[in-house]
Image (cartoon, rainbow, N blue to C red; front, side, top):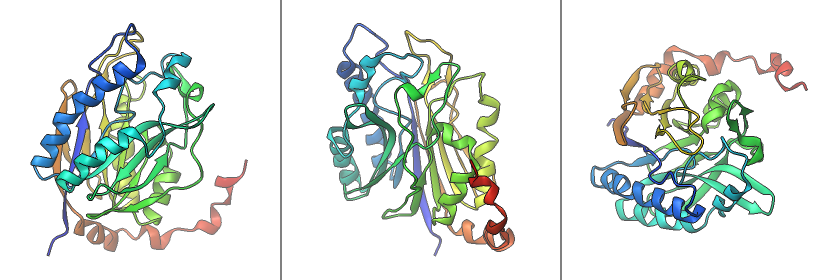
Length: 288
């Protein structure tokens, strides 16, 4: 019997681009904007749903404004608790990217994983942190720890890679070696800087590792920074590197696709990349 998983991706604009509002007001508006899409996903039978990078607010990293430290929260914490109710209601795994607070001065760009019964399974912290061309992330985020966890959810084994991580094949390979069947990459990326890479790198990860990927990017422009247009085009890609579906460049959208996990075994029986690896020759990768 086929192992089919219904996967959903939500791309949205930030609904409250108003610096006169408090951080909490802006976050609440973003959360409320996502709820109808989460409800729609549940009603349409989505089994695994991924939201965009730091979904409950703007991508504030074009600034270096310390007021945005107030956007951080514990994980698990209040937003995870809200989302867990929808996970439980619809028996839907939900990946929840948030700005994580650990203690004063220690913050991470993180994604929490909520299982289909509302249970918190754990989190992934973004490893590679950019600091260039309006993406001043080192001001806000500490690099993630050394773990590349794979989460056994009710429906599949999933891994998380966040935005800039996608430029680094090493972690993508580790997620495959750790057993990931689907890897989700929630992102916030604008036209110009890396748009031509958006549909190259992640299909390449899917091919090299023989797994599915779900890739999410927000849409719209965000004041007051206006660093460019977030160009959407969220998509699923299969282990052959073939696009299953692609969302629009401009619209808030729930993208739903059925992933046939049996394809993973079919592909790996042909392309024996894990068998033919030579890790004993890769020492240079870990030299400083």
